[in-house]
Image (cartoon, rainbow, N blue to C red; front, side, top):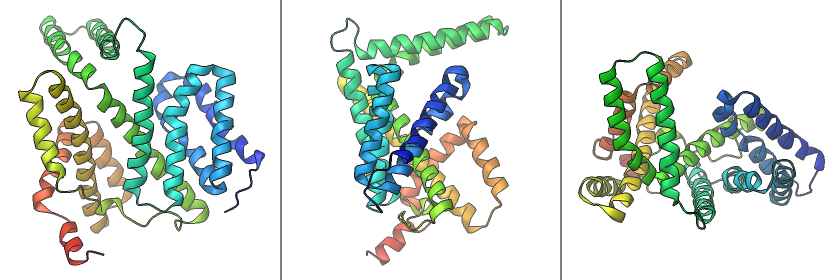
Length: 317
C-alpha cells in the first residue's frame, strides 16, 4: 500500500461526512443511522492509503469541521468518530482479530469522550451526573406528554411516572457504561460495514479470518457478571455505581455472545438470508428475546453449545 497522500482521495470521505451532517440537520429521524456510519469512509481510505495519508485525512476532516461548525463540534467529532476510525484502521492493517479491533477502538474513543465530558462540566454548577439526569428527565417528560395525547388511562400514566422516577437516577449514574456501549455498537457496525465494502472491492484477504460465530467470551467474565450483579443489589454509593456500570457492560457482552451462538446454528443449517433478517428484526424489537440472548450467552460458559472451548483445548495453537 502506498504511503503518499493523494488529496483527491480525501474529497470522498469529507463529502460523505458533510452530506451525512446535512441529512441529519434536515431529517433528524435518520440522524442515528447516518451518524453511526460516518467512520466507514474514513476507515476505508485510511486502510487503503496507509498510516501517514490516513492521519493527514483525519486532520483535514477535523479542520473542515472546525471551520464550518466550530471547535466544540469538531472536538466531539474527533473523539467520537476520528479516534475510532484511526484506531480501527490501524488494528485492521495489523490484521488483528475482529474482537481486538472493536475492543481497542471502543476503549480509545469512549475514554476520550468521557474525559472530554468531565472537563466540560468541571467548572459548571451542575455535575455530569446531574446533567445526564436532567436530559433523561426531559426525555421522559416528553414521552409522558405524548402518552397523554394518545389518551392513555390515568392509572397507566401514574405507573409510568413512578417507573421514570425510579429509573432516571440509575440511568444517570450509569452514563459511563452507556457511552461505552454506544461506542461499542458503533465500532461493531463500522467494522463489519468496512469489511463488507472492502471485500466487495478488493477481497477479504486484508481482514483477519476469525469468524464472529466462533467467538466466545473468556470464562472468567462470569465472575465479573456475578460480582457486579451483587454490587448492584447490595452496595450503595460509589461501589453501587461501579456495579451498575460493570453489570450493564457485561450484559451487552453476553448479548453479543448469544448472537454469535445463534449465528453459528443459522450458518450450520444453511438458513436462507431472508430468515436471518426476520429473526434479527424480531430480536431487536422484542425485549424478552434480547434477555433470552443474554441468558444464552451467560449459560454458554458452562454448556459450550458450539464446542468452541473444547476445540481450543484440543488445539491450543
